[in-house]
Length: 143
Length: 417
Ligand SMILES: Cc1ncc(COP(=O)(O)O)c(C=O)c1O
Image (tube, rainbow over all chains, first blue to last red; front, side, top):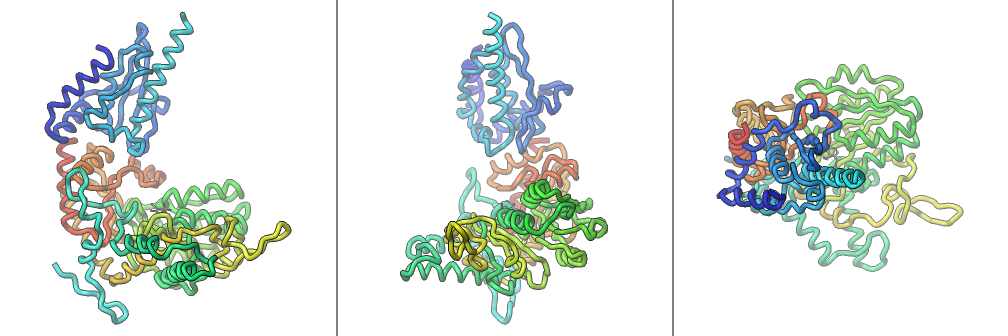
């Protein structure tokens, strides 16, 4: 599925929720489910500093596609990370760099991406796009 | 429930539980729920009287101060200077010349560090401050220490959130040039023994600055009997406007200090050969001041003065006790800062949850609390925690606010754990 197909899928899933509690229960569930990054990568080197919650992010390349693993110490942040990974991981570098992540707004989680929340998510998305850009450059140089 | 009407200097005072009505924001909603505001330690809400004073100022009183010969400007100047007098009375300062208007506690501390510190502290001198300090009372001293080769000595905090006074005594020596602590801790609510801290510092000949950012809303500050050299606080944390605060300093020391910022207002005469400075307090007030802030601050002081400080403290104590009891009943909840000597601040953690997650769910329930390190990273490190959830209460809070908080925390815990 493309980035936008995945986004639309998530928007569809979220349209089933009647209120914020159901929505957050789901996000918390997503957050609890995944140990999304191996302990060895939970280090300063992979940490994105947010002042409220911490985020760790690792990217790697396989067959011209970019894969992400990430984690956070706050479970709501982790749940949102799970959604971001669902959308962006395994996509082409170019597509990641140029992606417009409209699903966040559409499912009513935009407030989590405000820099004043300082939860690390805003910088995480920036980093994901940088990885996309960086790997794109690398691939171009190889050609 | 009726609290006995206080008596202050022979006047009848308003009962504190009637205060809530005066704060229009408390009648609004957040996320579809009536607002429960429990973040007054970050910034307090404003009573209608303060909001109206600012409105009236701009509607009928606005002109630059200390400058115009015309009546409007003189009236604005009178309002401005009346506020200085009101501040002096509020903190029992011997003279209104000792009241310097600044942007807030942060600017007051920076002014002292940059003016007093640069002029009177020398290489090898030591500055003593505590682990409880807000970043605002750490970083200005680090900047100064680097510049002047001074060292910082840190008073440790004990498990219950109180300062280790024995350790403090051991830190003091002939090298101690300045001691600075907060009057009340913003992160934990601890009330520090500032009289004793000051007395001990004075025995070593050190200067003393007290950061009163969290103290002024609770009513009674008496700089004359405290014996310190400097005391700072912010208007926005005591029902007044943002962007205005006070540095109080002892007159002889302020006289001896060089100006900090240069500009209009702070000079007597300027020529390219020589500039002479204005007298106190204007020497430290460069540029057009925050006039409506000063006007609003006076209104906040007038407002607070309707209550007996003892009644305010009594009311907040009740809220604190209720909050402590309610929250402690929640499984896995741990309060950080348990000393008896504290104000209406409850900082806590719930096992198996992150403060950020709790804060998000409480927000959805219309409850405003602060989460994070509260600008006291060294303190959080000491406790080995990423931060806390902090509920801070003021005179306009009531028991229902606390009950809503406790319910909210239970609900959040059920969702998160
Ligand atoms: C103890 C303490 N000191 C200093 C400050 C800084 O105050 P302001 O930001 O108003 O200058 C605060 C504000 O949070 C505080 O709580």
